[in-house]
Amino acid sequence: MKKKLNLRERALIGLTLFSMFFGAGNLIFPPLVGLQAGANAVPAMAGLLLSAVGLPILGVAAVARCGGLDRLAGRVHPKFAAVFTLLIYLMIGPGLAIPRTASTSFEMAAAPFLGSPGSGSLMRSGVMALYSLLFFGTAFFFALRPERLKDMLGRIMTPLLLALIAVVFAGSLLGEKAGIAAPLAGYETLAAVRGFVDGYQTMDTIAALNFGIVIAMNIRGMGVEKEEEIAGETIKAGGIAGILLAAVYSCLAYVGVTASGFGQSASNGADVLTFMVHRLFGTAGTVIIALIFFIACLNVCIGLLSCCSEYFSQTFPVLGYRGWLALFAGVSLIVSNAGLNAIIQVSAPVLGMIYPVAIVLIVLAFLPGRLGTSRLLCRISVTAVAVWSVGSGLLSLFAG
Image 1 (cartoon, helix red, strand yellow):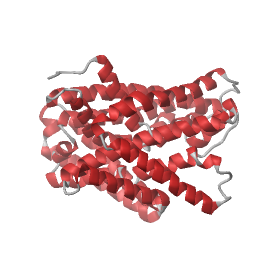
Image 2 (cartoon, rainbow, N blue to C red):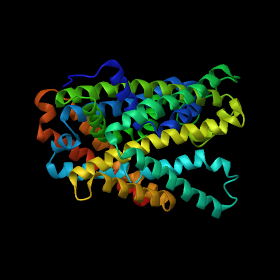
Image 3 (spheres, one colour):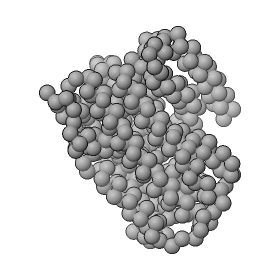
Image 4 (tube, one colour):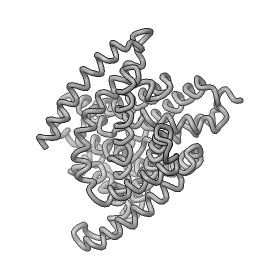
């Protein structure tokens, strides 16, 4: 029985965790922050790294320290833990995040080869249906063996993804420069605060509370059996993933800063990346962007399908892991083709209700001594934040 992983194994687990975090949102927000922050990109990125890297890694560590999300949330009340955990898994599962991996990767990896968005809408819908079928079929196949995700994600897909991003960064670093633009609205002052808020939208803090269940399975598959050793290795993997996330976000933000000098304006980071890659590599840039988004979205889809199916198979064993996996893949397939925009409109306020509560739970997990385990303190803190976040979320929902 092993007590700990060696350096190579630990790095492999860290790469696997990184790949589960790094999806479309992680690709989109850093270059947009770089573009909009311009000359204030450094403080803006400091804020983004705090919320988009620091909080998720603390979330991984918090769940590992407490022995699972159910135990962490159970410090408030068992019923709260059940409802909160269920909502978390539905949000990062078929309710929003999993369907979005297919729709986003389609827009970036397949749609550019179909001509203008307004032409051939019927053909476009048919291609989208076929694409999502193949996409979820591939994700389902690899998610069948969650304990072996390290072999697919850690050894193959993640190194390829990092290599492609490195090519784009190197092109921006060595290519033509046109100065750095002045910061846009929202970034002239308090750029770090604005960056922190933008990083909040990656949803990784919520995802971090759930990924531990799959990472622990992969660590056990390497021969580590004691729970305290598994928790320790999970935290170390979180540290490796955090370093990689920070490095990649910084590279992507630099791409956005470079784009700002050319007077580029964009409403999302996908447009920023598309503009820069096409400027640097011409028509070959379309293929590079397609591969980056496809790999990133597929990695996250596999990870989310695995952790959601594992949780539901343990909580509601009637279907078993493969049954839940098939159900979630099927529902996500349908949602990704019909009604995703409506789901996002409803889900955004719901995420606004859940996210602050998740942050409070993470903070409580690191309080020393009896403070962190005090049910009274947990209940007061979570109730106060929940009342505020739910109230704000409902106002946003009905106002929209």
